[in-house]
Figure 1: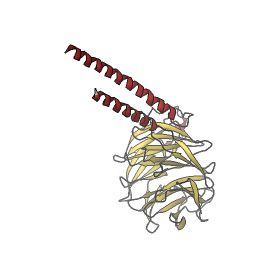
Figure 2 (figure 1 turned 120 degrees about the vertical axis):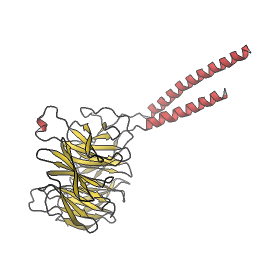
Figure 3 (figure 1 turned 30 degrees about the horizontal axis):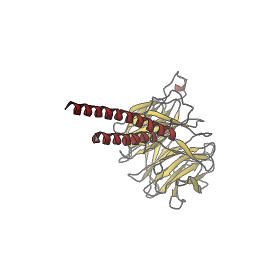
Figure 4 (figure 1 turned 60 degrees about the vertical axis):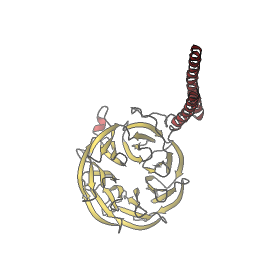
Length: 406
């Protein structure tokens, strides 16, 4: 009898904890702050050393620095006159520096692309690197070698490698076609470059040991942005349709997933329209991806099953680039049309559902209110209590009958 009462109490306590924990594990992605920055912000990058986010303002030729402690701009760094149109950035954790990629507008002919190097200790410019060609699209940091990789669109598809020791060019690797994006894979010591070719599209893999292309992975759409998922050892690649493919009835648009072990496409995640930039959320094991054009929606992909599990809408905005703040578990999205950066909290995902064929109008994942969670807990406890009480009554009657029969 006493044992049954103990079991009864434990069951009630366990049920309350289980229900409330499960309910609290589901909460929506939401915009927690909107930060005004410079004109036409494009690239964003997170500085883990300072807990700050650096934003390239292509319209005002400057870099804004946002503190993740209060989501406010703590510094604005004007770039030199020769460093025009900042478009992308990467963070050098070894030196505590930000490398800003400047790509001169097309109308300014014979102008060389440059890299502005900013020390995060005092937000001052410490170097300017001239690249010698005028069309650059992406930049990434190789933490193993202390090198910067820059993807250019000049003939041959040059990828320029720069040492952060002396800010000088140490090598150039040709990947062919027209490079679109670049990301570093720390697990394999390789750099992945998305490339649009004349008749095919692919992702080139560069080994940082030899600074040579060691693999070429064919993808079906024009690959644009890339994100490295260290948890799975995978590269997620956004894609857009070529003008020819866009004329096809029901064309297949997808985010490709490449295994860095085999350098092959292991999954293709259907998307409703062209996708551009991605960022990896290490806390949740998720990929955030935005859409091309005047689109203010993000989709969230779970790397556990390669499914879209949520769509998030940012009001009155059009998203450009994305960065993940690992310290605060937040996503920063630049909005070039309204000169702001949106800050979003990540979330604990519910079970994945199949990818929708169209983007839903709802901006968030369904969530239970506090009152609903309490009612759920009470209901489960009541049901459990009734079941255990019934068992107790039956046990008592059985024991009584047994005594009467003795």
